[in-house]
Each structure stands twice: as C-alpha cells, then as structure tokens.
Amino acid sequence: MSSQQALEESLEKFEDLKPQLETLKSKLDQYLSTVEQNLINKKSKFEKELLDIYHQEKDLNNQLIQQKQIQEQLSVELNKDSENFNSSSLKLKELNLKQDEFLKEKSKIEFEIDKINKKIQSDMNSINSEKNFINNQSQLINEKTYQFENLLGLSISSVDLNGGEDDDEYYNGISFTFKNIDPDDFNKTVSFIFDPTNYKIISSNPKLDDDIINRIIDNFKNHKEIGYLWKDMRYELKNKLLS
Image (tube, rainbow, N blue to C red; front, side, top):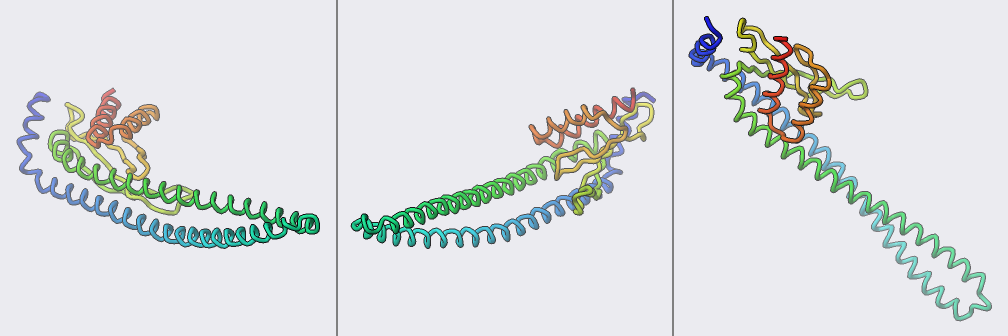
C-alpha cells in the first residue's frame, strides 16, 4: 500500500475518531480553564498589591502636604527674621538649613511617588498583555486544532511543570504528539512539551538542537500563531526522525 493510499484510508476513518477528538477538545478546554483561573489569581494578587501601593502613595502625599505646611511656616518665619537680619543672622542660617532639608525630603518623596506610579502602569500593562495573549491563543487553538487533529494526527494533553529550584510553583504545560510522520509506519510519533507561561519548549522527542528550538520560539514570540508553532515543530521533528 502506497503512502498516499494509507493517508486516504486514515482520513476515511475520521468518523471513528470523533470520540477521541471530543476527548482532546475536553482536555484543551480544561487547560484553558486552568490558565484563565491562574490569570484571575494573578489579577487578585495584583489588585491587593495595588491597594497597598495606593495606601503608601496616600501616606506619602499626606507627608508631602505636611512638609508643604512646614515650608509655608518656615517661609513666614524667614520673612519675619529677614527684617531683623543683623540681629537674627544665626536664626536665618538655621531656617535656611531646614528649608534645604525640606527640599531634599520633598524631592525624595516625589521620586518615590513617581516610582509607584510607573510600577502601577507597568503592572497594568503586563496583566493586559497577558490577558490579550491568552484570549488570542484560545481563539487560534480552537481554529487550528481541528485541522491538525484530522490531517496530521495531533493529540494534546496537559502536564505539570516545576518552576525550578528557586520557584516552588507548578505550571500547566501542554504536550503535543503527532502521528502520520513516517510513511512506512503511521504509528510512529514525534512530540514536544510547551510551557505557555514562559514561552519555552521544555523537551522534544526526538531531541532537537537548541539553536533550532530557539529559532522556532523567537518566531512564535513574533507571530503569536499556535498553528505555525505546530507546523514548524512537526517539520523539524519529522526531519530528525527520518534522518
């Protein structure tokens, strides 16, 4: 039986594979639900941190108001003492020194407020970017999964990934497995595990060189297209298997 005939026969059996496809879609929905829950947890944590930062900013603003009041009081005293400069030169020097100290403290407080505002904006941008990326990937996965499941024998499952020695958290990864790779044996498979949180290929079977994986991930970060990631990885894994 030729390779073309074998492929046509496997496509004719598509109806028999529908229950498996439903199972795969169920796993994918479960994974997307887990990712969405992680995003909600991160958002809740950020909102708590944002509230703490708001209170800090409020305290700093109150300090700044107090310092302004002190400055006004010092200015009044300075004006009074200036009229009697000859007899109050020592007092004037002390007031000038206090005013210098106030200006330094004011500058420091304003700098801290500016840092807080920038951090708030940065965190908001980060959360919005991550939310948009997950929404886009969910839509792309739904559109591409059907094509790859039926034409390329793609199967999808979730795996737990350890964050590393310095990170006790666990992340949800995705395992992608392809059949219909070897024209002489359609049961042979190739696979890779993808970490969607950190945009990394954790492992592949057969193992690909680091420069190949880095190139594919760099491209994925630019186009953000899950279908292209599957296509590129399947192409390289197939070449590695058949070489």
